[in-house]
Length: 206
Image 1: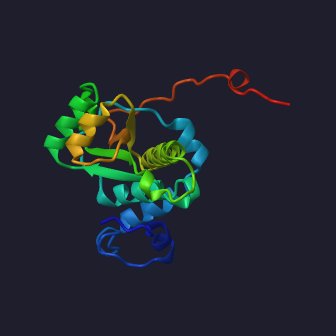
Image 2: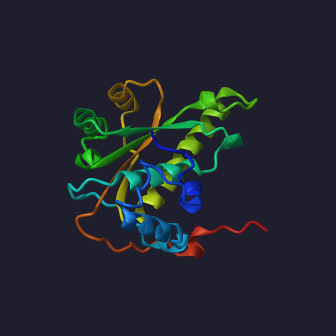
């Protein structure tokens, strides 16, 4: 459904019915090119978690870019030991709200559930190590998706308080979820919160 070579095709100029038909969505094409030049440090410094979203739907091309960003995240051995569930069904979203400690914003316009898939990690290590790799893979993919969402003018909130079993039942999967990422247009722009002083964050080992 979502092409994996979107970034390549953006630069190559290949036409696609799915990806910005130029004669109909010329502005979207220009916007996408601008987004690809976004300074990553500006994105990181200005990102804020958002819990109040507009009902406005997110454009398909923006979701496609978010998935493409997640696809570029580093993974153990390059095996990409994770899966993403793009939840559109409202009934499933309602069940996820219940599975996420009744946090209402889990019913956002776009809901992505990042799950571990250790079976994809074809490395010769004990199962507990492979599972750890898969947790890290899913986490990094979600983080890349979150930064991409902000670069696209969207907001998001990361949900870590989840009942894994209930999430799995809602998605009808045997894959264990690591996090839920809720995405949409913010009701208002939030300013970044101050972070820890680097002097108290960094421990230099000589």
